[in-house]
Structure formats: structure tokens, C-alpha cells
Image (cartoon, rainbow, N blue to C red; front, side):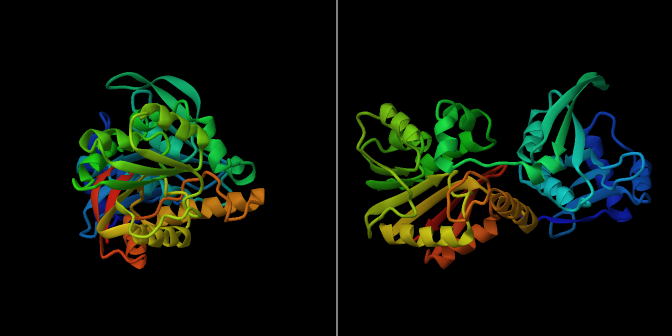
Amino acid sequence: MGDIIIRQTVPDDIPEIAAIEAESFPDPWSEHMLMTELVYAQRILLTAKNKDGKVLGYIMGIGEDDIEYEDTAFIDNIAVAKSARREGVGTALMAYFLLGLPKTIESVTLEVRESNIPAQRLYSKFGFKEAGIRKNLYSSPRENGIVMIMDLERKKGAETIEKMDDFFAARADGYDEHMLNEVEGCKEAYEEMAKLVPNGTKNLLDLGCGTGLELDGIFKRLPAVSVTGIDLTKEMLDRLRKKYPDKNITLINGDYFKTDLGKSCFDTAVSFETMHHFSHEMKTGLYKKIYDSLKDNGVYIECDYMVETQEEEDHWYSENSRIRGEMGIPESEFYHYDTPCTIENQIKMFTAAGFAKAEKVFRLGGTTIIIAYK
């Protein structure tokens, strides 16, 4: 998927939007109904397109406070063309919708089928919480609807974030199940990463190794590989040790930004879902250390949560900065909050760090793998 361009919907978009409605819902809105939405000032109708102008998806809702709805926004529909699903289009549309809401809006409400788990995961990622059930809300087939609400006032005034090591220590017991079963694309990406590690790898560096899920497949392919793993959370490392008591593993409980990675020590370096908490500057500096730690022709394989558009990236970095400011947390301290970057920006950081080439080789949902070559 290339660049996603999100703009206000225009009449020429309606036929393609209606086609997406028809393939997404058993009771779709007609072209006439959609066209009518464009004339109301308080309605929001946004379209996502690719660089060639093809409509990929849309989001529709009420975004202005008025006498009827006061300070609440509503999302009526969000849908993505079948050919563009699991490519971050829905996430981009949601981020753009929320960023454009008036400051007077205090909450956002939507409804979703009980069976639509992927949509519920998307909404939860943005902070929506289940608020109730509407019995038999949907027809064809008849099904209950889950009411979900995001309280913007709570997000702006009372949201807190946890220290990085405390966050993962508290979740160490259920971490493996969460990553394998609840994060879209991760199960497949663990398998893909193992395939991408070069056959000749004898010494491997694993940054943010956690419980070692990415090592499962790597050890199956390369049982004699020597692994150096670094992670901030002792509880995660304890579980890794128990998994592989007979493997050649050196584990470092520490901060990989500060740990000496050495010079020309490793054939391959990997990281899995650990880099999306840090600034461009911090990551570029770390990538330079990784580059130096690799032998000639070595590779760094990064799997991480990445977004499609600059608007999405800006949204998450802005939220992180806001919450830190409200809690009095310096940018230099490690607290858990997702700040995913675009694929394009990630590749730019690898290039700035000295890598000769970097390319995306896998993407499912937001889970993305990039290989950087020394």
C-alpha cells in the first residue's frame, strides 16, 4: 500500500463509497443517502484515497456540537474496501476524524456488531471503551450492538501512563498470549522474521527480547546460534531463561540505548515490537549503534507497529507529549505509550544511521518488518 491521502468527501467520491458500503454491510446506505450527508454542516464525511485517486475507504459521522447532540460526536460508519483491508486505512481514517473534531467535543460514541472483533480492536486502540449493549440493533443477520465511548475530557485531563519496566512486569504472565492472539499480524510476523534471519548467522543481537517469542522460530532454524538479548524488564527475561535453558544465550537486564553493543560483533540484529515508544532522534542514535555492532554485510531486521500517514504519526507523538506534560514526565524517561512512525520515516532513519539500504518486506495490519543492510 502506498501513501494514503485523506480529504473531505466530494460528490465524485460517492459512487465508490457506495460500492464499499455494499460490500461491507448487509444494509448499505444508497448513493442518494450518502449524497444527502454532504449538505449538512455538522456532518463529517472523509475519504481515503491512494495516490492514483482510487477510494480506499471512508468514515462518516457527526462532528459538531449542536442543540441535539451537545458536546458529543458520533461515528456512524467506517469501512475499507476489501482490497485495501489490513493496510492501516481504517486507523488513518479514525485518526484524521478525531484530530479534526472541535475542541468543544468531550466524547465520541459509536456502535459495532458484537461479532466484529477487528473493528472493536481498532476502536480500543484509540481509547474507546464498551459502555453498553443495544439488543438486536442490527438486522441481516440480527445481532446485538456494542456501544463504545471515548471520553475526550478524561483523555485530556486524567490519562496516565506507566513506567516502561513496570508496564511489562505487570503483564509478563499474559504477554505471549496477548502478542500471539490479540495483536494483528504478530503471530505471522514471528514466523516471517525467523525465515529472514540469514542462514550463516552465528551471533545474533536481540534488542527488547522480552520473553523471546521471536527466538522460537530462529532456534528451530539455527539451533546453534549464539544470542545476546537485552531487555529492560527482569520478569520478561526470567521467562525467557526458563524457555531456553540449554541454548547459548547471554541476557542483559538493561537499557539498550545505554548498553555497549560493541563493534562488528554480530552477524544479525533483530527487534520485535519494541521501537515504537521512542523519538526519531533516539531511534536514529540507536540505529547507528546497531550498525556499528554488525559485521560487514550484516543485517538488522526490525518488526514494529507502523502507520501509513504522517497525520497518524503526528497524532500519537502529540498525545504522548501532552500526557507527559500533564504528568510532569521528562521526554528522556521511559514510559509506555505507543508512538508509531510511518514506514517512510523509519526507512529514512535507517539511512541516516548509515545503512546502505532498507526495505519493507512484510506488513499485516500495522505489524511491519523492515530489513536494513550494512
